[in-house]
Image 1 (cartoon, one colour):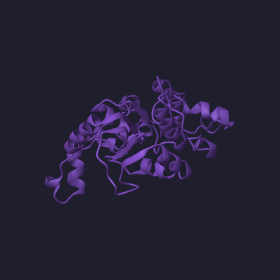
Image 2 (tube, one colour):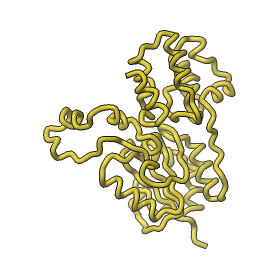
Image 3 (cartoon, helix red, strand yellow):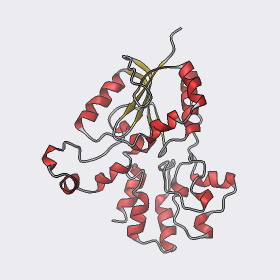
Image 4 (cartoon, one colour):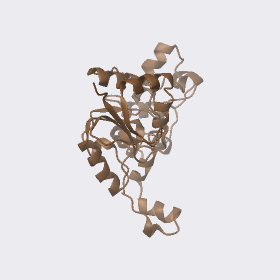
Length: 255
């Protein structure tokens, strides 16, 4: 019986989420035994034609060519999963969405007339149907393995949608916002990083994007009461997931 075919695709990104796949190490050998890795240029130059049973897509859409390419990938993929902040929210490059991209190209390139790019950096789901979005910058190794295993088994993956604060409570971490007055996006950010920053007494940077129904307005009011200024609040929401709708809307309130 033929193994399901897996393809991994890159768009505008740093490749960090693909490196997370390689970081699976021993588990990757088991994945390779269960799947036919047909396309994964980060790991092998061998390329097999589609159609593909599972496509993992990293990176955001930033050019007209990207738009056509993602449509072609969707057409030959039974299941398409976007992985990482770039693919699910436009990534750090979505900072262009709040400015004039032509100003950037004129400042950076000697001949900006040769640069062909879109005005905004957008998520994969803004262009094609996505079967599942895996958040994170980069994605969690454990969530990635759970997602691949669940997809192969035909069941719903167990990826928590609770806030980062829930991870802090389970880990017994002291709340940095309450104890230190540190700005923290934990109350509005989806869990998944393993409580990385708060465990080192740093505020959450929102790497996993907004949780379901986040109350960013209330969080901003609390942070403002602790002394955060509008420019500081705006910058807080404009990082790895600046293009995520809830974060983008809240950041614009502080322009």
